[in-house]
Image (cartoon, rainbow, N blue to C red; front, side, top):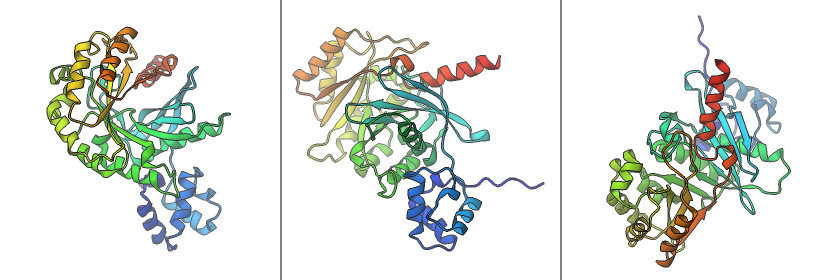
Length: 361
């Protein structure tokens, strides 16, 4: 019996790997730039569609590789313009489901990208964290989310382009460090998606050594999921992250990251009603940040069924924010979008899977 050979996905190759493949097929290196453009700018579904290549090269590429983009399993559109996708990736034993979100801003779209299927960090307020980790995503599965989003935008009546990328979806990016870096390199390629590092933010709970390495790389802005101003509270909310890198050590590592004059580290802080949103915690956050160049992104918690946290009182949010302002800390309040389409990370996927189960019964 002959076993079927699994062909590589062209979207998983770095530019240099693609160049090596093209050369191995007897073609000059510049052909790689043409193939790269077809993959990332024109988003073709097959090598046979790359019409400025010779027919012989197209056929050889189709024999040795495939193009496999994540498949849309579910899509919901919010009244505020937010679009959330459940995507199916992988095949057979590698099959998994992930989420990505398109968020409309005044002048552009921002896309929230996943780097893992599920997450191993088990943060107590995060639906994805309760799922556990299935596996890391490949470059094709990470950047393929962008191709899905661009295809969606091409089919709707909008003047807004996809401009900013935030790695804040499912998973801990720095636990998939090699694929993350390869994806960031591919993003910046001028014949590809051509997205500047200034438009990219990577969010992490704080993983070493990747935290310091990424901070020094200049490949994107750093956002740290803090959510508590003390080690004790952080251990309650984010037990794995807090124990792996205690808060004092986390701040020491962040102080070692070189920042340009106008750069700062973003601290993400989800306000959980009655848990971490008091004036005392706001003052403790001010003390924690006193020796670091940082700004704060406050996020009012979006309640998720089955999790024991509530949305904070608007007055508490305003008072918390004022404490930071009064100490001249730059602080923004992220407006919750997509509440009507399971906006919080992992919610739509959980609802989708429950629907699949109910259909199977």
